[in-house]
Length: 110
Image (tube, rainbow, N blue to C red; front, side, top):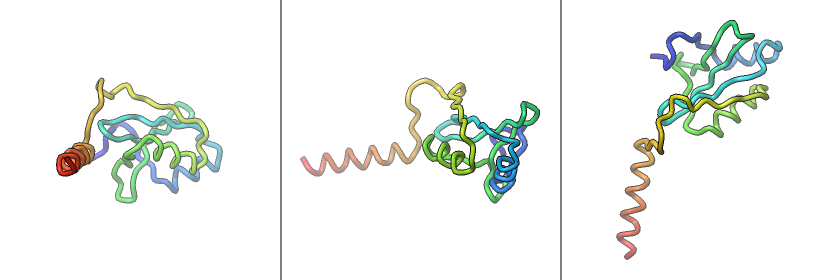
């Protein structure tokens, strides 16, 4: 299921063709929970969300990864949207597990 059902999904090869053709020059990286999605706007007419090979929304674990991915596609102008991000730090399961491992390691060292 797509994160944003009203948006049209676009694959990386399709997006690259639009960028190479000069139809796309900017994108928005949107914070969605503990990850990020890339949203591409074309001339204000249509909004696309980057998809995986399986047709699902492409989720990035970090803002840096999302920005570098779009930059590698040739998109030079990138905005960041944190409007749906709740206040404070939101921890995913990976972060909670790492914190527990550090706590256990410190307890064992003492």
